[in-house]
Image (cartoon, rainbow, N blue to C red; front, side):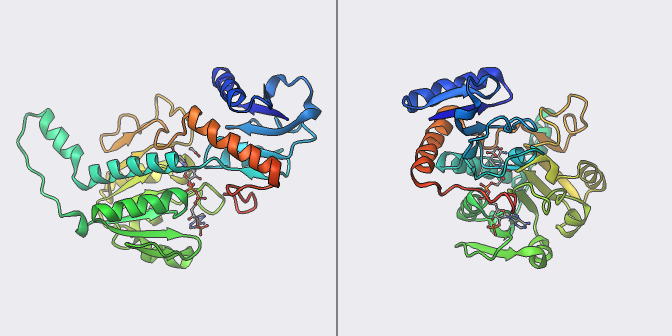
Length: 309
Ligand code: NAP
Ligand code: GLV
């Protein structure tokens, strides 16, 4: 069986080819840009493929996204109409839970203010309410959002969650659809975004959303950069409606060196590391999915391209 692999970095592509080859010695893995026989390729394993790069392979059966999101695959304007397999698993969920808990607690306990006091050698206690009186809202209750919400609830936060369809999650008050969005936001003090990027969710972190939150709320965006309207965040930080933000994802990555987020005192920037799958883990999951798809013609982690996630 022949598989083409594409990542924007040549070195990473070679790493993936080596690891997949070790796990599946009976399959052949090629860099997508140097395939000897395009007609023999049955699967493409990709991260951020360029437009049209999958067209030369007429016998492809499925596309594998190296990651949970498929927006980077759907961005290919000349994408063949094929099943898209997501790469998800307990490692990815665990990492995201850690990131969300870390940054929610950081905002909750106002660590930036304590660090600023330390920089001034100033003893300035900040007393915050206990987590039980802090409402955290999680947007998106899929693989990542549901686990993050449960973890925050276990810490003791007052957790609300929002998804497209109704959900029941122990310890989490849930809302759904456009009709539930306002009630979900009301009273939320720390807003965590774990939505997929789709036509419906692009730009959802905007002034209308910020203005529904409790004044002085914090934002954590660990999903995709285009969920956020950058200028709206800068304005809301200036007005005090939003007190602080942690951003892991950006419209352009790497974040350009002259972007105002880098130096903003109320923004914490992390370089898309909230839950990046490492190659050894990712290749194990992908090898299982490829074998299962080849055997059964489907897998549990199929995305729905029409829905966008
Ligand atoms: P998922 O399992 O597909 O879950 C998506 C959730 O969002 C579902 O609960 C879905 O509702 C909800 N949703 C989708 N469209 C909605 C809408 N219009 N209104 C309200 N809710 C909506 O996705 P996941 O695996 O949790 O991953 C979420 C995203 O995280 C990925 O798409 C990716 O962009 C991002 N991500 C980031 C990193 C990082 O390192 N920063 C790592 C991994 C993933 P239903 O349940 O009702 O369908
Ligand atoms: C990472 O951003 C992913 O989609 O898995």
